[in-house]
Image 1 (tube, rainbow, N blue to C red):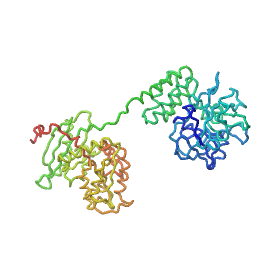
Image 2: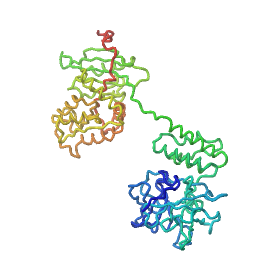
Image 3: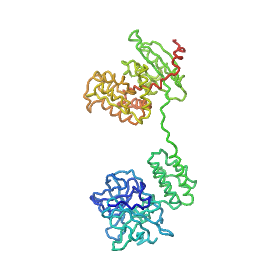
Image 4: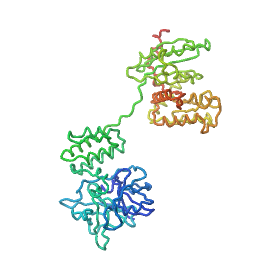
Length: 575
């Protein structure tokens, strides 16, 4: 059939009128309705019937499936054409992402001159909807229940079955003044009836909180509504209570004790609860402040300004009981040697803790500290995050500071070049996408390398430790690909010593499931801080899934030293 007439008012045709609803009872069109909250539709009681198999379709959103509904409130209508209370409130099965209808102040439908009204209904043959233009005959209520409607043009679309429950809206603003309840039905008679909003509120008191006062103009209301819709679409992050408080006059009522659950509820409070000459000023100020928020560019979270402490451990060559240690601090891009030496293993924890404490003297004030251990490949699984922070402080290092490990072999220039290019790409990602290396049936190492080089992949996740024989080649491939981030569980899947089919009982699979859910929305640059929080949780909870988590995180830009040649340990105590 034909679509709504082309000369219909813009307020009734544009995206702001998606709240028009078609009501179906047992699969057949029963009438119309309109959305007043994200989960509430108002219609006539005779349209909703007994409420069995009731659905609502928003035809101005093509392709939107019907939404199941139930009768949540009823006006008491008993079935006669002139019976009172022909109103039903439908609760949808879920919130819909559509801006609800805006209600007009009481008595807005009539004035010194007739006001053109628009009704959008679904008579036979017009399942997609059709418009009719109406006006109120007089301000007098019939039986204290209805206003009489008559066609604006003698030759226009008359009211007919299928318009029942439709919103009656002002043509110039799109605000709703009432609801169609009946058409005259006689041949050649082009009148009908509407229940105005003040009568609807008599049967459903919750509607009173949605009807604005008359202390402001339709233009004010339209502007505020448009700004709230834009803010909702843009996801503007603001506190509605603070926004209202900043706009309110000293004599305006305080915000409700429970606050506002959305910008919509704050805007409705401004429009519906404030009255008098000051109401218009508050509406204008509220709208001005919201517009300023919309025009303020959103501040994108910047990557942490890491000021790292680098602890380099290496085989000493003088025996298994000795470890070569070098500790440096990075401040404003410059490397400051702290200390180096060969240390017996039983003294290693205390030695490193003391040098880390000394390294803090060189860090940029206010910058984010990061402790990084550069380890030989066969030591990457060392639980350095569990080492004590200091001889007099048993707090694990990984619970005191963001702590990562890196592969000492990846510090060569070619690998750093590739990693730097990868991190420039990762800076644009909103979250860390995990490429899972499962215990059972892992892909071939060559294919894994290809996967890890894809643009959106930044994190290789292992459910077991690198020592697992069947996954050792895959771990080596992840290191050489090179994957910028690798995460695994030291405690996963039998501590990595046994092969596993990777079924639902696999602890490694459970670790990867939890990891995937936990880091999906974490920018890669933020992972060290996020893993710190996980380690703190795990330290306080005995069976926490992240208790043995190991993070290999390698951003060469954090360790860049523009003065490397000149600063080569000439100031080191052991130079």
